Amino acid sequence: MKSHKYHISVTRVEDKDGHATDGPSITFASFNHDEIIEIVRRIQGAGVFPADEAASFAVGLKLFGEAMLTHKDSELFTELRPHFMAFMKKLKASLKDG
Image (tube, rainbow, N blue to C red; front, top):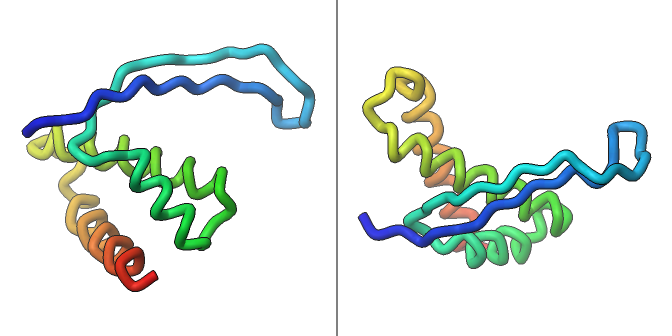
């Protein structure tokens, strides 16, 4: 399956007490069969979450989903797979309605 390649970077800019920090950070490459940026925009447009939370939700969901798809034969995902698929169908349907 053809995939888009993404450059993912996460940097902690504030600690749990609200104090500014200068790291740490992690950067990695990730592949996804979907256009993640478009999905982020659609979920943001649905207005279910504030914009930053919608972006975090969408990116996390797509990265997790692609890992599960890539490793579909892994026993790690056996119990979760049917529930995840049902959730994704419900999410996609809600985005079509909105």
